[in-house]
Picture: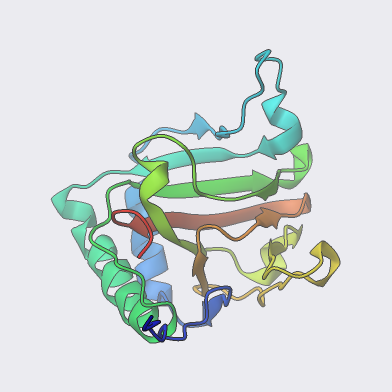
Length: 201
């Protein structure tokens, strides 16, 4: 018997890039978003009786950024930066960005939030997610509450909360539990995207 020696990777480590998007890039995103309609944020989790109240799990409004030429610059920025981080942190097999970028707003007047969840699902698309990306588009003085928490496998109370900084990004394996705490004032704006490929390897 000749066991192989696995390559060590940081399988439960979130990565923070405090300068992921510049101020000018964020302004360009904001201007282009004006032409995209809002939808109500939904969740993948359902129960067998179909009586699950989504508002208890998630309260947010979203827009889906299409794969069109006017948005290609943003997809390329995210792809290149996350590909570099992945190769130096988890080394997952990533092949493409299949899904659209999700722009999300959490509002204080409705206590916007997203309770504990993972980003991997059972359908053909979410099953392929490997890396989750959350990019903050709000300054910390624009809202209160709304902390992003990422659990690294320890107790929920010890979950990691990255600093609130305009243009910063948190990148982490899509199988990690995470949440957005309720907003108590203002609006929290962010971009969310997933990169993936075939089954984990």
